[in-house]
Image 1 (cartoon, rainbow, N blue to C red):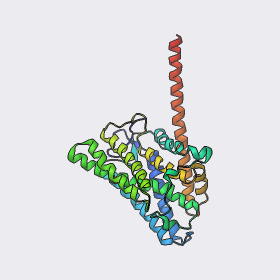
Image 2: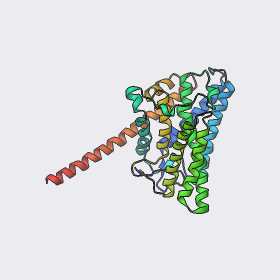
Image 3: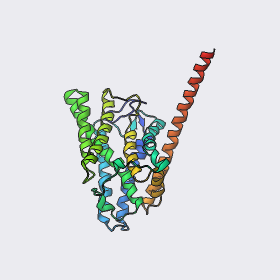
Image 4: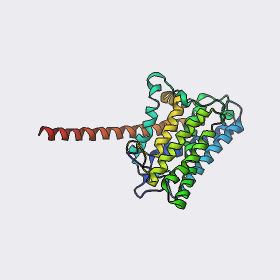
Length: 300
């Protein structure tokens, strides 16, 4: 698929990206808004009403911050060069691959298991699994990726304008994004920090590098979209939560108003899976057609 991103610059043929606009941006903002209302109505399971409100406000502002940073430098979070089926496939691919173990034999990615002493843990103490899952699997991947990649994009563009050195600009933007990501999870082991840094660093490296025209290993085989790396982040958290099936069934039992957020997520994700399935079907049909033509030529 190649590079289909528009983080640092908006290509002329860019169109609204289904995953970026609806699944990531709308899903994150709606979830943050749901948490604010959940805290305001005073029915939180832990009694930490104020903490829950702060959590929702923080993720809402982080998401808007990252979105604004990307917009200021001339890039776009809501648009990309990917078609809706391409965008959906790029996001679903890591979600299915990294959660394949949970689908077939309940194997979780234990190497990425989240620590118990996170900054948001105080707000989530005593909350049901459905509430925690919306934080870890929707708010965290969306808000953190948008905010950190937005911050890194500004640094990358500034360095590129000052030096004209694309590889340096790519690394300059990706490094702080990786560092911040490794430390926002609270008290963690050095190993966890290293893994967390690597995930965000590589994500930013590929997104910025693609827009700057830098040669990237595996570029021909990895769909370089914002959704792909969002899917990697979300799929790791999903595996820790028990897998895709467990996640969807759990969030549909969330208390109101988060129940409505859970329902919206299921609907948006269902459309995403259908679009990804359509993309795979088209590619398979094209492959079979080409194969049939080659066979006819050989036989003929």
